[in-house]
Length: 236
Image 1 (cartoon, rainbow, N blue to C red):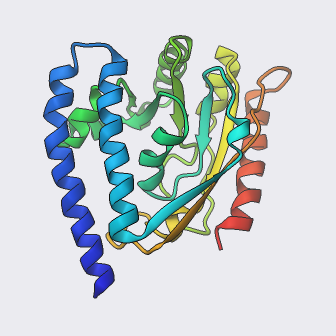
Image 2 (cartoon, rainbow, N blue to C red; image 1 turned 30 degrees about the vertical axis):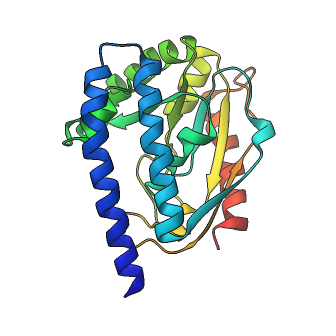
């Protein structure tokens, strides 16, 4: 009963914080990306704090020394909504590759749109891939990191989704390296789950993967092997 109550309180608090900050981000939209992104960080910090004090979910990061100084492409395990929040505090300013339907969501989606995501139609095939490469290259060259969930959608804890090659193609075409990320957030905040279980999320950052002398398929495979090896250790 306590678990349901804590999860409900967090949901309401998160919803209210989104409704409050979204209009501020709309007003800031004509300004620079850094301004909108900075405002979004207030929401990020607040909701990570809520998760900790209300739901008892904290996190630990291993491998911070592997974060390069130059913008890179984050290929991250996707188990939860948690990583979409926490990555923004762990890595430098970033944009997400998302399905375009997300920007239509009231308040959350509208606020998300002000942070310049790469919104694609996943049914568009090669057209969507071209959009990822063209827009992703521009974001990287402007100094922003790009976050891609190679499995495409959230998977349950303990499962492995099909790894798409969009991030690797972007790396190969742009010359920017890939940083693999593994975590077990799904153990505490499951895929599409209302309940939040207390515990400490373990997140690991791998060494950058250079696209030099590698095919895009090799980049994907190297990232997948590293991520899933880490998952066998932490996703238990």
